[in-house]
Length: 432
Image 1: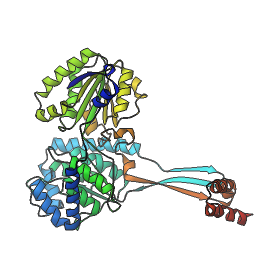
Image 2 (image 1 turned 90 degrees about the horizontal axis):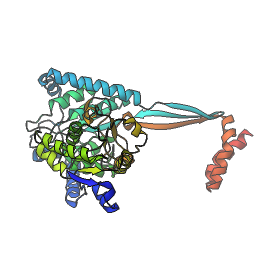
Image 3 (image 1 turned 90 degrees about the vertical axis):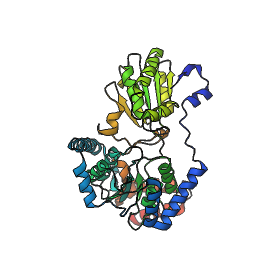
Image 4 (image 1 turned 135 degrees about the vertical axis):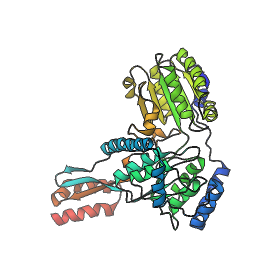
């Protein structure tokens, strides 16, 4: 990891220090995804089987997971793992139910009732990656809020292994959360199938979930097409920023940095501290712990584009963090809540030395599908609200129109929208 001192850098150097790994939508990637989408739209299920053979190296007899595969998956799983999945699902359900939006009804004037009603997005598509490692936790993070929101049709795609089956834990988590259909599809072709539909895969209204550069590019392309589907948020590689004071445990800090670095070679981790000694101790500890990781090669590639940054104070660390807008923000300081009110932009925040980011990834109850690549400045993580539409309703009585009609007519006239004005004044004249 590169060591830097914030106050010794000019503005250009600071921008470079906080730059994410390059994720430019290269012509090759963009064109490749466009071709895959076109192939799926033209060839449907037949195209999906061909693309699965090419990219996932599996021959699919059936695209959809059947009941026997769900049963076999449940039977094959260790009972301890099944219990952990159920435990995590229960906590995710508990938090997301409590945080779900509620209907609202307000009388804004005598005889004027304004409401907000909630309706589920009818059909949603969930993508669960399984490239270097399957992610049953993502099935929980997407399936639970979709169930709470009441989505009528929940479709899930996850890549098949060479044997033509999906990961057993992913299938167990999907069934547990009430997902209606699971398809053995991965990559851009899965996104295309859910966005446009095939004979087997239903066309979805909105797509959710993380993925590699091809999946991300496919989501961006279908979301910009009126015939495609909406998406949860723009996405990029996983990232964490840690703010640590001089008394932070370097073993814990290093472990948190590595927990994100092992996600992928394009992940990024950043440590901010006013203590040069702490930075040096963490650097040494990262090297020691990394050597023992099964995914050490992946972590080292991520660490090569990560940073240890010396700041003047914890207050300055918060300023730098807000500028970076991390997906995950860990506050390993003596009084983490003292910094909380100053934090404006972060996907999810972890307070204190006993709160590793890993608990949020799995079972604290929050959601791990979060904005990355600086999008935490304007996006939130997935929640029940992500799966709902909030619709406003208004009802005005005759007395209510007498109350607010003149205001409406005046504003319509100011905007030179005569038909708008008359829609009110004609009624007021009738009442008179």
